[in-house]
Amino acid sequence: MIGLLLAAAPALPLDEAGKYVAGAYIVFLVLIVVYVAIMASKLGHMEKELRELASFAEHRADGEAAAGSDREEVSADV
Amino acid sequence: MYGKGLRPLSIATVVAVAAALSLVFFYAPLDADQGFIQKIFYLHVPLAITALIGFVVGGVFAIFHLRSGNRRWDAYSYVSIHMSVIFGVAVLITGAIWAKASWGHWWVWDEPTLVSFLIVFLMYATYYPFRYAIEDPERQARYASVFAVTAGAFVPLNFMAVRMAQSLVHPRTFGTANGGLPGSMMFTFLVCLAAIALLWVTLVKLELTAKSTSGQLKRLRRALDAPAPSSGGSRIAPEVS
Image (cartoon, rainbow over all chains, first blue to last red; front, side, top):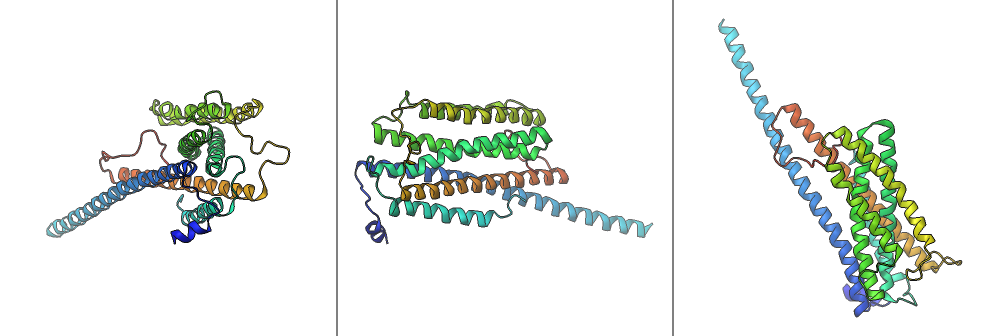
């Protein structure tokens, strides 16, 4: 595949000029990859926080349900 | 809300960038003067144009914020400037590589185009500490908008000043009477410009979506009355609801 691409290219001089051109495009690619990695890390933090909140909300709902059933039992006893 | 349409936009960006790279390396002819080094032009110049327009767009959003008081415009302005600063880093690095390859120096201080872009970049680099220094969110947003409008107005003035400087060193690719670029090179350049602009829009939308999600999470945490997490959001970045 790479051989085909290189054959189709008009001229890919891998001398002095090719080094600089490759450098410029690689710098751009690295910047984008670093940015996407930072965004992925932020997404991971958000996912973790959302999981914590979901867990917290579930515990609170369970607690409220338990408290509600206790109240019902107390009022039935009275 | 901000995430709506992000997937097709991302796909369009990937396709456009792939098409642009294909055109650069398989279609556009080698430059008679610079040879293969000129391929950097298709990356460096669209990045610079997109970054500068992004700064102006940030200023326009800041005007909307000052007029309406809606914090959403401040978030747009912040993210536009943020993304343009990232693109600005790429412009400076690719420009330095091109300068080294063409002129034998990483940086040329008597070249107005380079120095003026560096001035614009450094000016916007002060946006973050300026914003960060203000604690009150309302004042922070208002002062940052004033900064964005002032700096955004400086960008086209700076561009015109450089064009009038009539440098003999930096190539004026579009400045000649016949347009400067042959058709195939111009077509490749325009595709590259569209691809880089699409990438900017996609990344801005992605950043806004992340900020919006983070803001919604904070609201949810407040609603659930839970303690704030230690890994909370940035104090600099505005919240988007």
